[in-house]
Length: 150
Picture (cartoon, helix red, strand yellow):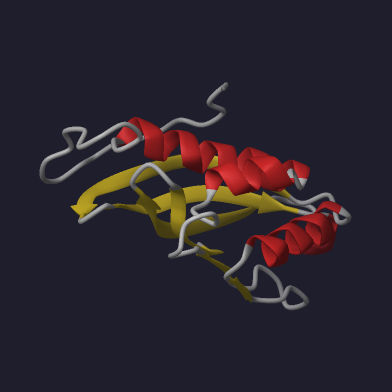
């Protein structure tokens, strides 16, 4: 997989791998996969990037980036894919710039701030800067991803 973003990795506490898929590199791969899959409305990529197949599921949210934009909160893969497809019709692009990892809380690797830009036909002529935070579920994928204007 080609990493399309610059990652700033800062970790507090122990980051030693507890088991396969349980390290910052796996978290970075899941975040990159999410952004790439979202831009393509790729159901397989979104499923792989998120913890949607685990009993804990996941939460994705985004704030309003313009007066006409809609804030969303999604907690299932079907809803996430429907949102990605609707945004794809508006030529939505999420571009990851960098992310900071903050350490483990049980099996969750906390990250944030996550900086990105967002562009779409209905968001104006220039990309909008964004900031986010979230958590990667060890070996499963993104558990939480909250995005907002910066």
